[in-house]
Image 1 (cartoon, rainbow, N blue to C red):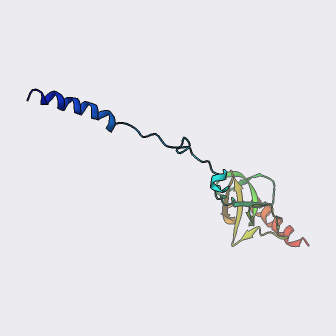
Image 2: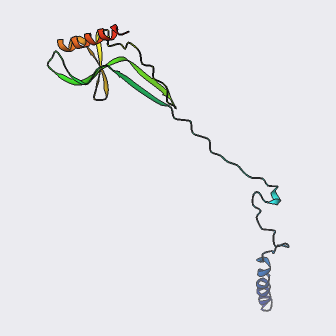
Amino acid sequence: MNAFLPAAVFGLLTSLPVVAQVGIPATPKKFDTTRIGEAASGGSSIGYSQPKPPAATVRTTTHIVIGEPRQWKMTDGKSFVGKLIAFEDIVIEGTAAQPMNVPKKPTVVRNGTARFYVNAKVYELALDKLGAEERKFIDDTAAAIAAKK
């Protein structure tokens, strides 16, 4: 039994390198890679293009200003600084510049109210809340626009 053990160990040790050996390819270029577009692939290629993002739509609102900024006095004693504007707005939507269609006779008073542009905001205010001078100014402006040809 003593002779059998060393022979078994020797046999195992000599067989390990045979199992762990890596095969060498028969042709040296067997593991080379072929790039896209070379002769082996027939000149094919992969084309990828990202889809174009949709064009941005711009919406521009233009208020028709009827008068210069002025101080408007109200019947309760308060006042504000703003511009008198028409009820019609010019709204342009699209990606390119478009011509503006300005009405010939903009509406100054509608249903007893007037519009004002104050601190980059639009407000509607009833005429009976404005002072007498302010109402006369708005009436004169509306009459001048109505008389215009």
